[in-house]
Image 1 (cartoon, rainbow, N blue to C red):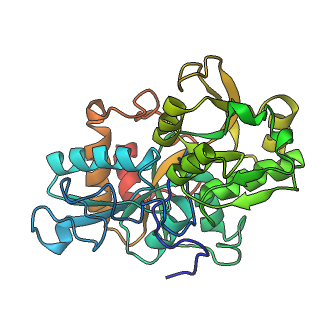
Image 2 (image 1 turned 180 degrees about the vertical axis):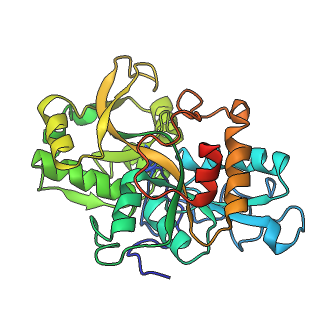
Length: 352
């Protein structure tokens, strides 16, 4: 097990994403996600109570009593992002179309998930494409610096993980530059969300701020309680935690646009232009320009080629059974933004 600071499996999000990432988180993320102490209630067991066969606690699927070789571990993100609900839809599809059962676990998303793939405790995971590149090349962030994850392999890219900077309307924050001196939740410590948030702040020249680290759901609570001024969320929109916040508070999505967006993309080539459509969140009626990374499915070189090909085929032959991010997840776009070497099983499917 490689040492990943702050990645304790507290179930931040993702995105991560992100995805958010992100988003994903998002995410997130996500999206990516969150390095917090698990006080947000997403500690890897919440949201997966065994009813769907993923108890998130002991690595077993709790459902079919099948042999170990038929059980696969799939690491997602926190319950407040996109990774977790999407992963449970994937679980349903895979179990309906193969002999495998999927144990979906809530995690701190991208950075933590890379560690789980590296040590074999996860067979598949959702991560951000920028984090995948950092990990495979042993660069980019402290968790991977000079510690390349050589067994990391790609399966497919899925959808843009939007960088969402959310605040309350009453906080009078209308641009990233307004964050100087603010208290900002940048996502779980060591997560893809935190990496993206810090990159954006540095690119725009915001260096004087108080950083907080928590998952998307807890960040929403912090905003509602006035404990923070803004939060970064990485994940495919709409992110559940932001939806919930918008239903009870007047929120504002802060744009990353114009010269700020160009500065961010110049410093980090994996960012792409993105737009959050007006009406995505209650009370936010205008389109908001921002940037995004890409959510992807990853695995490790030790998972048999036949297993990866079977799972990949089950997902991409049955995309009509998904209800999340359906406008983005396609066979034709599944290699767009792929930042690492494909697993041979995935290559067999997409090259067929």
